[in-house]
Image (cartoon, rainbow, N blue to C red):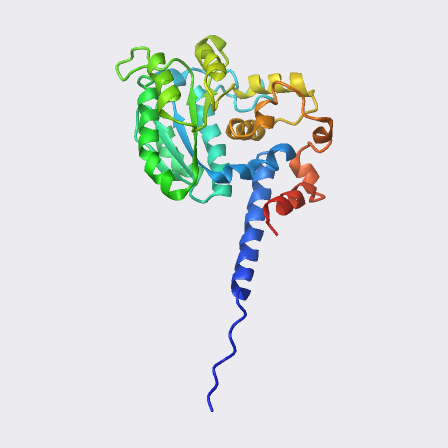
Length: 302
């Protein structure tokens, strides 16, 4: 007499799948942290970004061809000079790397004077747009309105929040080149709701971004991040010269600042004594697996 086979143990295959997926996620996370020399403080907070879809708005106006004082290799005074545009490309590559490790949808990259790139999941997808010389004006208000309009319905469906990074080196204008600080302020004050917005200053000239520092005080859910060298100097002045702050940490601060008060205040007040005892290069601590074990326990990556 035929008998039905015994029922499969519910969840047995899915458990193996989840376990494999978690291991792959943890391996990717370790690789990210080591590749960009991300400190343990940042590593332990990065998964907050899983709740957000990231949009980057890149200033591709003519002034972005200005020679950069930062340099891609600060330790080498004889390194070839680079432009603000070169620096921005490197930054967006790191943002992409972080975002795709946490969410395989990647990021959306908008420009002020050229078509946007959707669902960027690898730095190679940026090459074509960044190979073109930046030119034109700085219509940030128009593009920010476009992003808010286009993303409103999609984010309502996904349940995720929106995080916007705007990289610029100067004063906003209209499409005709007329200064438009008032227009941008209006979008930030009245049109974006509680969407966090981060401005990355692609310059070390304070006069070019003075208006942003004023808005940082006036407007909620808005953060301004200086260029890497300036931000590093400010943070080490507060935290001490032994405080780890790589370019990868700088990008992490950029993304976490508007959603994490402790990270936002790194250039304002020292971290607690208890916290400072655990801060270090995550790859160094990772040899003992301490940082990564903490991440696994905290976020369920077993």
